[in-house]
Length: 443
Image 1 (cartoon, rainbow, N blue to C red):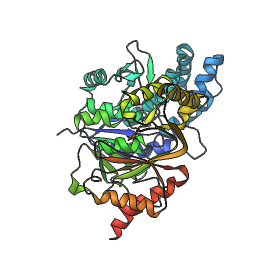
Image 2: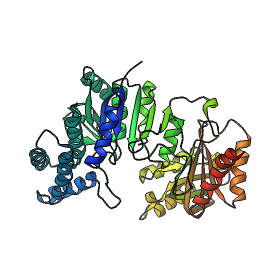
Image 3: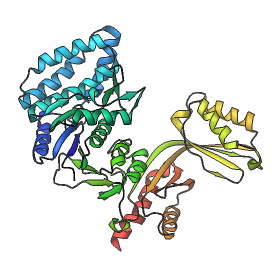
Image 4: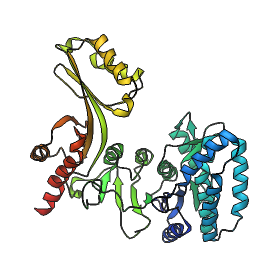
């Protein structure tokens, strides 16, 4: 078995010299932690500004006027970190050189990427590890990561390296231009490196113990998820559970590498393990977690003998595609076709244009629009194993006087998505949690 662990540390872990000292202790505590991926410094306190956000402002200033007052704030953050860690190089010299490069490159991607670049340089120096720039490992094709080429490139580059710190969040295209992953993309960098080096586990360190079964701002003291599957991670992350970037699972799942979500500030907690497969016997609860998103619009189309109109749903969805409207769910029934759309896609005149196009082309009997809808995903690999689970779910909602606006069964049997009014969102999550978790624990 591989004796390599990849450990990614997020922005809160890298926020100051004091938090980085905790990172150093964690890395040194296990000699198998050989490949370290880092984010740019995050918030030190609630009103603080993340370095990445400062760098976006720096980019705006440089592109506008070839100078940047905000860069002084970035410099101060890194000088304080470097001074607190007693680095062996002149951080001021490096920061001055980077600013010259920013003025020369004049791209948002390059400027913003320097947060992770500097974080990795500093941590590598203090640990005595080798620094490896992500631009030499992560390959882009257009705006997307080229997974196969990245795996081939990173595997070759890292094959004979033993202890390394790598900058997260970015890579490069074939011309060598810096390209950014989406926010939180250092998680994906860690997963890509894990696959490339055949890691035994990918540790993702943040400021929470792992995945909670639901949002603690909604449910009081929710249980920690001890283990889950990649599919469950994907379902929860897609619906707003943001401990780990939703694209993280793909690279590690290709090699069957487990993910371990851990807390830098509570390293004794085992966190949450995410596997390719978890046997039913290992599950403590029927459901694994609950997550949701607000502010959707439900469009319900009715037409008598709809099934006699070939490609009705395809044509309606093509209207959405042309208007750049993303449809999350499209449940259908006898003579009805519905679309659940995040309301941000229907701003301006887009909603009216879409409705008029449907009415003019498809000649429906009615088109009903319901706003202020929330989607809730109830996720669990054992959810469909017992027919009484559905009875428990619907009974919990009915007993709380919650009206269902939509039900969509996940085809892989892992989750059910329900639509409720925004005003009922928190009540619905508490009702489901109480029915499947609290009451089961009390029995």
